[in-house]
Length: 336
Image 1 (tube, rainbow, N blue to C red):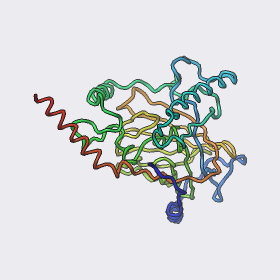
Image 2: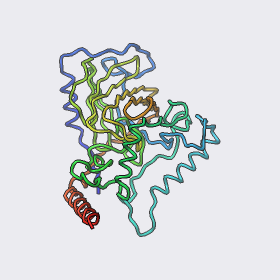
Image 3: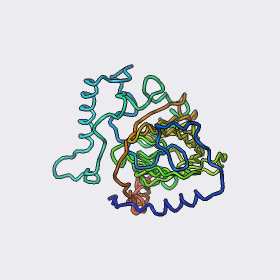
Image 4: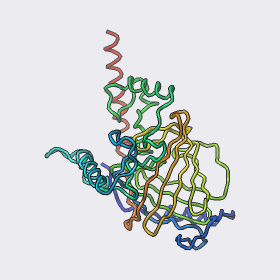
């Protein structure tokens, strides 16, 4: 069970404060429009907790064809259908507690901002581009190898090296909606942004993931990291975060990318209670072309809570020993 307690942000705050004292020159925004809320040092103010739950799907449902935006009447019907689908995901038969008792699932109940039929804005069909031939072959081979194996179980034949496509999620290291890039999911759809003149901090509620993003123009490092190596800059009133050098393929919206992905995120404060988040994924080792998604985040007056996820770590011995017994049984059966 994941226990959620009020998160103490003192360590993060101290780290950011220390970063602010580094003697480097921060890039100033190009524009100083009066309508944009600003920090004491003149940068657009993006700070606070932002909620990005929405029932708008990442990809456009195929039955909507080329329809990119819904009318008010169509949106009401679409929201009703999406809520029914999410209720089916959340509700369990009487007498069955389900996973995590289902009580904190929070998909959202409405579409945010423009009534788009998908978060993906490019390609125009609102769907993730096709896989390249080699990537499709690799996925087909993995699917065949894992036939009959549950999603969170290790892949047969390599259980130590490969905990399966969901291995990082099981270990509570990466996954779900935190990305990067961030995409809405069943719960914990919150990110808190901190700012200093020289750095930006992005703390996701899900998987307690925190990124410290320098704004001083330094080049990317060569060390691969779980959430990649991020660098930020201001493009007018928009914060642009450029990320490369991922250690493992990240997950977003149920989609697996490669560790060679180049991710560009854009954060724009639209008004006191709305932040526009846009990201572009360029991963030529996975897809035939880049793709872009856009979603609105709304201010959340509540604090971020700790995501104390460790059952996959405490249970790792049983996970691996069970997989070993399974593989030994399969080997004996195959030798008969």
